[in-house]
Length: 212
Image 1: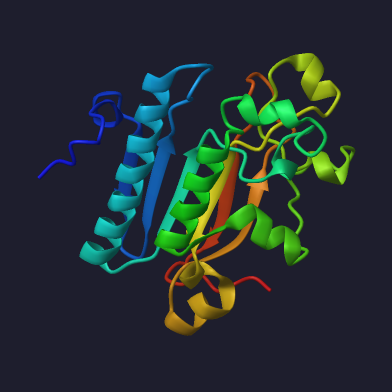
Image 2: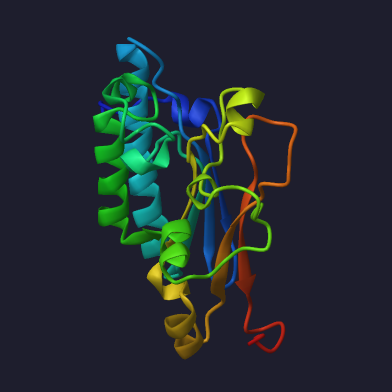
């Protein structure tokens, strides 16, 4: 039965696409922005996040495969994921930085047992050749800028996020004969939008020998 607290707009607006592959599941989402002083948008966002968690659980249970979840999640997971988050307390009133959005993201990660791919590979020292090496290291994580001037001044936000099952990390994946994720890329050399593309580099054990 539908949850009476859920909002049908997630389905009506086509905000989630799921692709079922033989060895893994990819879910792409465009999470709704909450706007300023828009209780209706906040209700929509809470409903969207709930339905997304339910979808991940449903697909993992039905197909017994690891999951990748990616897209514009419209949230900066921590203060450090927006350029002035640690110095500007007013930023937490902005969409994408609100406490309930970060709490919902944290709950999604915890309840689905997915990990933040970009953060994981950064801590492992895995660099991406797609990253603009001329940028400050702290700016490499950003995927969105409100204006071209903000981008030039490295005043960015990390809204586009790649979450993945631990089963897709190299050691565990190789042991189980699964595809594995080698890194998460932020394509800083791509212009033409307020967002940049992000992507995974995935090795498929069924296609070729693994590069060292």
